[in-house]
Image: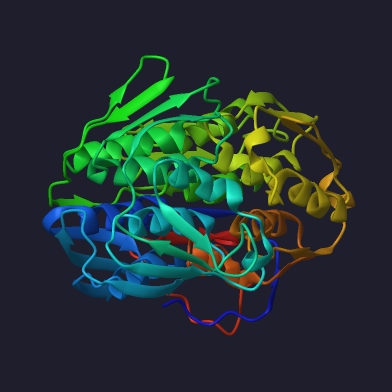
Length: 460
């Protein structure tokens, strides 16, 4: 597990840097791969999974459900062998706490509907107050028996297994992707299979496409209409395999953006490039549109700061890269003109409006940010006019990491509750510290960071 982090971290600026390193692998792909491996027929070996809160929570839950798991951990990464039971749950009962993670909640609720016993899922006190009726409704429509044990629509829930039948279901395109992905992942084990018909065009498909690709890698191929208006999965089973987790392109953006906004700086990421299947791997092209220099190889990408002047403001459609909105907004703070980020309304969920939360923190540092129904406009000011601020990251690692990157350029930024990065990229502040001896935490020894080389400040 990552080293302990204090409640607040002051970020100090770096003059310039050159860095080259390999990214840890994707938590999203890791937790979905681990779950599919447990549902597969036989023993799967999952290598390279980032050891963070997400994957730990899935592994703990799978252990509670009776799955045999053997895991070796080395430098925040794991080599895991999971004995899959072909869609069956070894345990007849379990009590699982998913903390704050709605992705994990949807995945585990779906998984428990395949069992033959009674399974209780609970969450943090804060999550217990959230009405999650819409998250569970599709499972209930397909026959799942889900009971709310305290307040209607709220955790904890009890799932009585053996009732799920499957069949056809119509879903609105605004149904959270976490629910659609969870339904598809368990679909091979629904007695009647699963057909999802979307009653309006899907506005965001990257995670859905990655889930379908992951299913295909484990031997299940879905039938998909050309326009993604319907997806069908027939009864079948996943096949056990040796599976390497792909690096997470979302986290590449933070370090590439750090180079883009810092004069005379350069960042190379060695294990992700033009061959990646993740839409977020194209983020360096957005930085290039803003005036940075981006160079792609099949398995590497490099970003350099603009040779002359500031970054430029842009008008950009980020519908396929909404994971990158926070770091793009942070980058836009240092542009020479406003930046308009379009088609990102999916971040405005009823239980958490990420755009409004981001706007609130940007206003703290003196940046004018406008939130509209489906867009965000950043109107920058000269860097010297940015205000010191304590950023309330809460449970959102995107806020902590994005404003830490702002702090590398301006100083005066303190991240409150930085431990939220454990959900996503546990070594984040270790990487940050390697970019500048004073950039992160003086009382933390940096983790062993494979392949990391860095030159700082006057050494350039």
